[in-house]
Image (cartoon, rainbow, N blue to C red; front, side):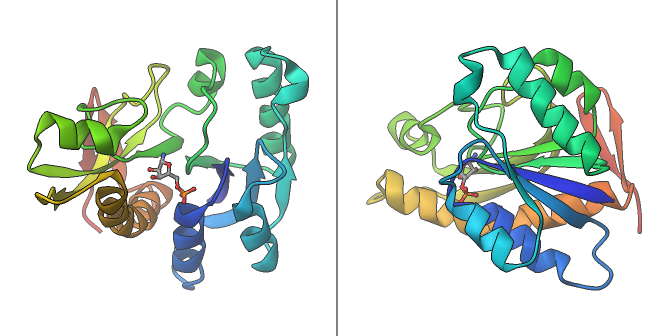
Amino acid sequence: KRTAILISGRGSNMTAILEAARAEDYPADIALVLANNADAKGLETAAREGIATAVVDHRPFKGDREAFDAEIQSVLEANDIELVVLAGFMRILTPGFVEKWHDRMLNIHPSLLPSFKGLHTHQRAIDTGCRLAGCTVHFVRADMDSGPIITQAAVPVLDDDDEDSLAARILVMEHKVYPRALALVAADRTRVDGMRVIIKED
Ligand code: GRF
């Protein structure tokens, strides 16, 4: 399936997916990396890998989210994209755009959802006294960080953790689970039943 990865910055999850996608039998073809910011580090990595890149800068749209999303949509359509992967994409998408990609757009969030939606997830997990933290890959719905969960991974929260050490431990898991979750979706092995995602046998 022709897949676009949307990024805003570093793009380490994007890189993990690109690495997985090198395998002959990987079911997603990463056809485009799109950033809302020309400085996004991940763009260089993608270009180096020979992947087509695009920038849709949100700033000229001056808060007109509908127009920004319409521009993204037209770039996705021009590239015949079938699946969208949000990987550290820091813009909130409009309900209309999200609806167009119903069950065809994935996001990764660095918490065990439904705990800690939004920002500063690692610090909040520490401050709450959680013994486990982790990450979640889910289908995107209009409400931020909600939507049917495809996969999660948990790591321990250690007594001497700070936000950075916990984030680093979780990031290792992000890089493992995101390529796998995308493969399941791209191979049509997921079926969404309400809030549940049923994984079909290989
Ligand atoms: C990751 O922690 C992801 O879960 C969060 O933003 C971060 C993006 O990192 N949504 P990267 O750009 O993939 O390196």
